[in-house]
Length: 486
Image 1 (cartoon, helix red, strand yellow):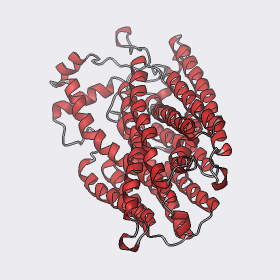
Image 2 (cartoon, rainbow, N blue to C red):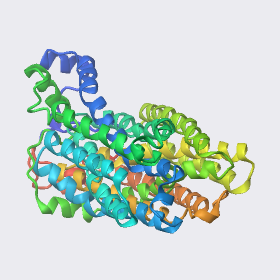
Image 3 (cartoon, one colour):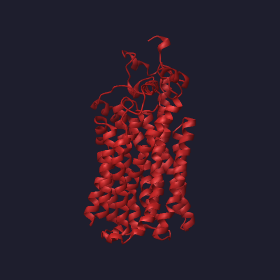
Image 4 (cartoon, one colour):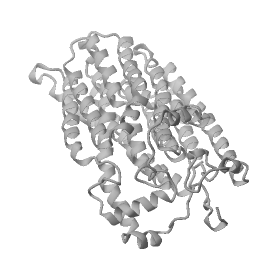
């Protein structure tokens, strides 16, 4: 390869000899790149974010239902209720990677709405379950059907946006989780007033109405979810050419990569992929224990059930704002690890407050700090492999592995908040604090590994991998021309 044709490596992204500036892209495709990005955002993000908001709402509304009498009506003990929460995550973990393989073999337009329809039906049926066995079965199947959405969407966005554009959009997508918590509290408070309507208790209506909403949205989503740029009908030919040029300049989205098990194996054998998984594992326990037990934690501080439902709104609202703010700051600084570690440290302070003080107002402030740190950190952790793993099948597998490894933390977390442990919940809060500290260590280690690997590639120590490799061949993230975002 002649010197003039060698790819030029920028700070943290790989670039090929293709146009880089906005003006150059405009000249090639005859479109305004910023206007095109706005068009993509408006077409893709609202639809996907709505699906994830419903996903998180349907998995976490069980916390709202509990304070409205679910365990009493189903004759469950506190520990049996925790087992039901655990079964959700077992189903989630078991079907995470298979769901992403199905996405690769089918298409987003069919698979994502179908998943949504399936879990919407299950979520609705939770409202009519009559015993503990039915509750257990429904929670397990709910985990199965929801498992493919988040990693599927992360992979999907990587086929539309350049590397440096994904992190903020994945964070925006993930902000639906905290937004679901805020809406869930308000909805649960309102729906609980339907207690007795149709002879049903309020907690049943929470499941039924929110589940029906998901079913209706899923049916409409068959119309508004699109496939990939090459077949999207809302794009003009010029816009499609511009997207292809943009993607070709710094990622593998335009490559026609067939599914192979060797690429799946490549993800399984990459230590960095396991570190991404541990990064989420150490966040998933505090993330899901907070979302599943926040109404109970607040109620145990001395508030009524109705007050607890409403008091869940401020922590989630603040978390939503900070998730987006931290994502923007991280993108501007082109750094991931320091923002994850800083946010995790803020959440740790919240748990220290929860462990050390029994005054209701002070402890409630601790829940706000916990949410304000957990959600921004998790959003960036989840976007990291989408930006750093190259190779479509490997990236899809890595995304699924990260969620699967991560949700093993949630499996443990569902057993930690026992009925007789309130109001300070030493076991649950203590584990959450320990996991957040572990997250700082894991992310710090991954930061050091990625920086060291980038430095080796800058010095040419990996150039031998290019021996015998053609100009148009690509070695994925093992390619010496690739740089990891840190």
